[in-house]
Length: 391
Image 1 (cartoon, rainbow, N blue to C red):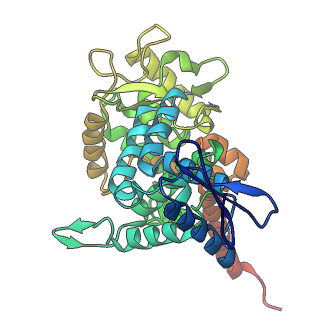
Image 2 (cartoon, rainbow, N blue to C red):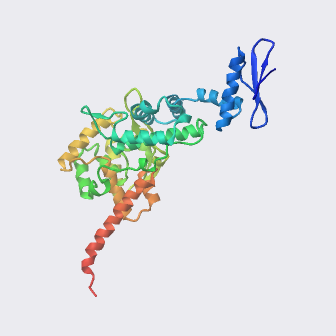
Image 3 (cartoon, rainbow, N blue to C red):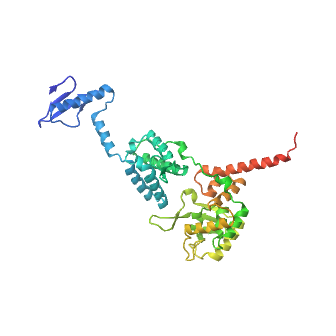
């Protein structure tokens, strides 16, 4: 045993040197490896003494385990692929997976992809978010010039990253999610949808008249049953209960990986709902079913001449001609939902009822329609003011 002022070095039968010392915890700690020379063993002891002196010491075997775990910890890019596989196994739609992959490939992986999941800090996320918004990293080139990204681009990227890190925490890849920027998930619409893009009941009627007869029912269903375009185009005869006068919304069109059009579950559980059909709309729907829909329960309520799905691109061109003929430039098919939901709110619907009717999973979306109701209340109050007798 070669004596030192601190620690000891022992020559083994193999001729290798073993270093050890008594640590601050009162226990003797061996070096996790042996050394070919006494000098190498001494230098290892000197480094351990330095760690103790500076307050950075922990047991050598513990540090070795931590270093090994760090080396084996996945990078963000590696964990992302595992997440995508988990989502696919869980039954998430191809469109959702494709959207996540696009957002990560364009805005997240170029910056964070090589970092270990466990090493990414809140400051790293803050830096990523700041550069994402101003368009500098990854570069957002528009006409060869770096431009700030829109709220729609940054918000969806942030929400995707937040969902990914929540999965990482649940799967013990890290202890706490560093993705914590509350303002990043706030929706800031470019246009005020509820107030500025709500068709009147008369305009809804005119739009339905401007559509081909076989597609007119789509306008009524979007406006007064609040169906999304994909939900309307995926609706089948068996989803319509003529006796109860209800519609079971449980499917929507999407574009699967590889191309084409298919029908699958609604985007969220909230989208799967049974809604009542207003009597006048039910009469229109009955007439449509008799004239244009096959007898089988699987027959599409709205179909192309071959009985298959109406392609969204084809439908979009027909819709554009309809709003152009009515002088409603820029009105989207989705805007028809706002007409019905706004009037639904004006008739006293609660937030929960609005969420159910529209198939919303977000309370913030439903609150937009209650805001529109409050605006209407204020407008009516101002009109009523003229009837108030002054004291």
